[in-house]
Length: 191
Image (cartoon, rainbow, N blue to C red; front, side, top):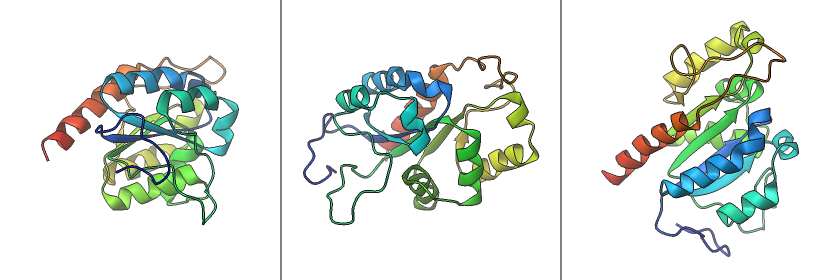
């Protein structure tokens, strides 16, 4: 379904919301967007307000054909976001993971992903945290909460593990997210 007043750049493809949080990994989100387009998705980028400092919203709008949304629209304005078929939260910050698990939706990004759980949408999250953040007792508990709610968390031993603070972070293999999205697209195609 297309949003009123906004032409879809990739018609006929499943719609993917890519929710971007404020972490250094957000600087290269354009590479992931290009990859999901090559894999057959119609991506739309939704950023947390703080993530806007890390991304090139003009370049992302050109890649997706839609503006990067980071705040709620005016009630009378048409929505540029079609309904999603799946949602990828990448990079998922410590703050967003903890708020999401607690059901807090004080930004557009959090509002969409908290609602997506209740809508039963396929959800994938790729945390971008350091080892000190991951050691906080709330983090592991909240990862478990989101997993129990059906979120595919690309985190843990043998998947992705955080690096120490101020080390530049552990590299993230975007192939993890792409493989998880391929599985979602295959399930959507078989419905």
